[in-house]
Image (cartoon, rainbow, N blue to C red; front, side, top):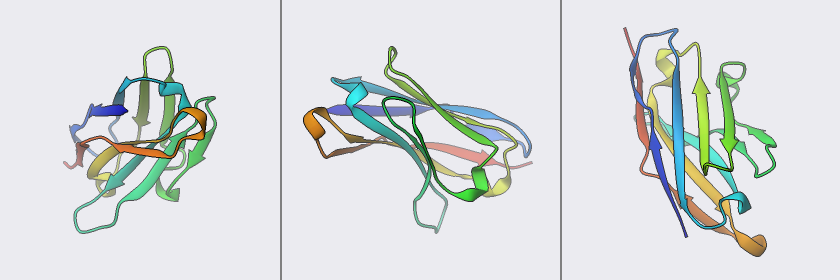
Length: 120
């Protein structure tokens, strides 16, 4: 089992930056692909980006390309989302999601989310 805890959200002005962190506890962190999703008020949850154990990146919504970067540190059981040039439309709750597991597992875990508000 994996527990995910997101942090790093907050209020930021347009054009600013934030780095979100996803801390994973539990075993076999490197057997999971980790994704960042976000959900804005009144909208569906959408994929922002994902990263495999070996660092292969899955891109999500086009609106964040060139501004957001996902990375992971397997030694620390951490995944990060660096968000630059933030826009009001990036306002959402951001969730960390782990999928996979040992021996080709199909587990699916979610964190509780961290809120990002982009506003002047």
